[in-house]
Each structure stands twice: as C-alpha cells, then as structure tokens.
Length: 151
Length: 193
Image 1 (spheres, each protein chain N blue to C red):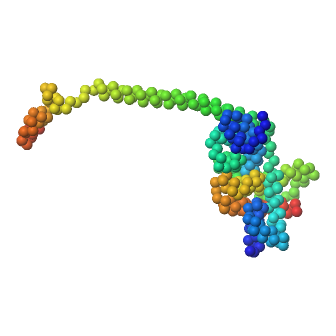
Image 2: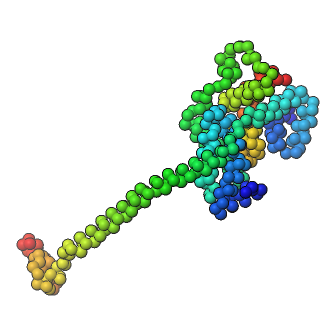
Image 3: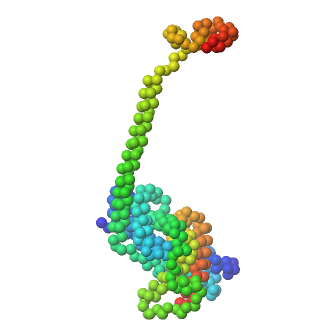
C-alpha cells in the first residue's frame, strides 16, 4: 500500500473501525510518516474541538418544561377530540337517517305487480302481457304483433 | 426516586405507567440532545425549544419503541430528523449568522486578530465560535454524521442505523466531512501548533 492509501485509512483508524491487521499495518506506516502523524493529530484535534464546542447545558428545570409541554399537547388533543367525536356522531346519525328514509320510502312505494299476478287478480294490464299470459302459449307471431301494435 | 437501570428497563417501567422513568430518560440524554441541536443548527436560541420538542416526541412515541436499536440512537434519530426539518424549513445553512472569525475568512479580509485577554473563558468562546463556524459550512448530511461520530461517539453501525443509511455511506461521509473540516480549520490548527 502507498502513502495515499494509508492516509485514506486514517479516518477509520481514529474511529476504531479498521480490522486489527489493517490497524497494525497503518500504525507501522504512521511511525515512519511525518505527514500521517500530522494528519492524525489534526483528526484528533477536530474531535476534541467539537466535544469542547458542545457547551450547552440545559437548566435543571428542563424536565418540567417538557412535562408541561406534554400535558399541554394532551389537553389540546382532548379539546380537539370533543368536536371530532361530535362530528363523527353527526355523520353516523345522518347515515342512519338516510338509510331509514330510503327503507321507509321503498316500503311505501307501491311495488310493480308482474303481469301474471295482475292477470289472475283481474287487474287491468297492458295488452301485450295480457294477451301472452292469456293465450297459454298458443299465440301466433301475428297475434303478438297485433297485441303489440294495439298496446 | 433514582433509577439505576438500563434504558430498556426504563422503557418497560414507563410503559407500565411510571412517568418517573421518562424523567430519568430526559435527565440522561438532554445534554447530548441539546448539543446535537446546537452544533447542527449553530443557533443557541432554538436549542431549548427544539430539545423540548424532541422529548415530547420521545414521550409520545416511546410506546412504539421496538428494541431494534439502542434508546440513545433512537432519540438521536428524532433529534437529527427534527434538525433536518428545521434546516429545510429555514434553509438555515444560508441564514445563520456566522461568527466574527468566520466572517473574516469569508470576506478574505486580513483583519488583525481580535486581542483576546488571557481569560480562559474568552479563549474557549473563541474556539467554540471557530468550530461552530466551520461546522455550519458543512452540508447538513456531513454535519450530522460527523457530530454523531465525534460528539456522540456512535460507531459507524450505530450511525447507519440512526440515519438509515449504509455503513459504507457513513464511512465515506465521515471521511469527506473531516477533509472539509481539516481544510476549513487549517489556519486555526496551525496557529495552535
């Protein structure tokens, strides 16, 4: 491996992400390479600097502000849940009403009586049905034609 | 009540209705979450509110935790996603005010260095500003990955799980992020060596 290949491994090396044989061979290279030693130093300095820059400490009361926010969101959810439930109930009630109206409507509307029933019950029927049913299947084509035309 | 139990046990206790367990989770991870947000967004003002939002989401989702990752990487995932959303929303990378030192470099002006008194606090502040400025110039993906590695000390495998990307992608992003940081902080490190 050349210097450039070792240099590319430095990043994984500082992260302990090289396998032992790779790490060993890199260490041997670094011992004799001033440039890699310097790079390694910079990589470690970057790490230290980032850790040092992470200086934010939240107040001790932070937990209470989280709890307050959780409660507040729960309350908002419950408040929102009221109208939502109401709306859902309204929709269900409307569905029931519509369904009932359709059922009642179809019950009250007189059902069309088929020709055969009307014939036997003596109700007036249209001439074609009347003639066909009354003929006991003995109608000629002409009979049907005449019955149809005189309807 | 002080908890001395591992994270999974805490989740169980929480699921059984003891909210003290949630308090313990917040205590354990609030600092890491706050700093991930701080270093990702580069803006101190938003840290408290966003950290709070992270833990509210943790509270709401803890029942759905599936034990397929560690609790902390799961919490970091929530934090990172929130940060990415924020960045998308505000395009914060372009908007965040860069620190005075970074501005100097951006403008290419060779202003004389601000005279820092021998106060440790000021030196630390200056160092923080420089690092923050450099981080803010990384792409959000590089920034996130390098922070999870350098600050949170997650392994490549854990980062891959947290960000739902391959380990190879993690390795390559970390490498590139370091290359960028090395370039951005070149002058800074030279002064200090």
